[in-house]
Image (cartoon, rainbow, N blue to C red; front, side):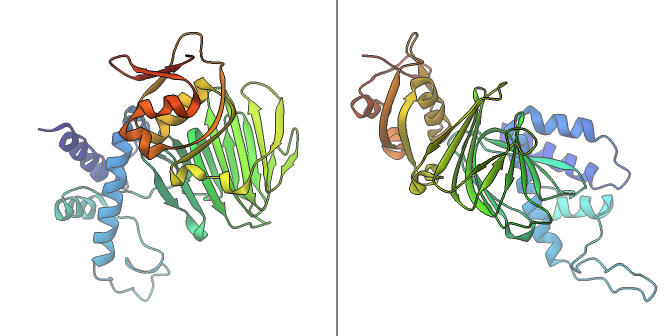
Length: 307
């Protein structure tokens, strides 16, 4: 059996189990999701397929003494284990149990994904990214790694709050891009505003501004950024201004799905330029003349370094 089929069957099995109101082993389920990004993707496919199937089910009549709408009405009942199992068989995938609590959405390197939240908010994930969301509170999220563009409708009574490592961002009606790496965080705003760490530095980041923050430090830096560069990765473009080669390699790996590494002693070399990633997918060696660096394949990855 192919690995994809095995993962799909595991997702279906978990779907049936979590569809049972008596299910309690959420720790094991969460560990399975976290073990491989492919697990979360398979479970997302299960969710989409079965919710489509659920929408096609006829609505059950509502009893006169039942204050809650019947299945099929805007406020749906939980799918029971038997119904979940039936839908698994019907669609050949499984069922997503929309239980209260957090859930993660992940992307593989080179992949992008759109996440639509309650109320019309949208999050676009770049490759090799992971965000944790909360079904109980769609106005809270945590970007655990990677990069994402947020389009958020501001609600002064319930502002959208994003955790990024040890930092906290609070929107003020906005479009903003966030990148989270082991070295720290970078925030760029194109519309509205974002407040950085309201309980600590309390810095307002306005359109056309970028804030970078080092991991494990209260230090931060504000600089200007053209509005057109905010979220430009969605169009396959990467603009570099005095960027470290180590960061360039990480960005290109995330955006293209091709592994780039840095030659020994070249991690802190600085480069500037503007790149389109599609040509680099076809021939990574094209990076050399664009940035004035050496590019070679070491058998496993494309290594970039000083000439």
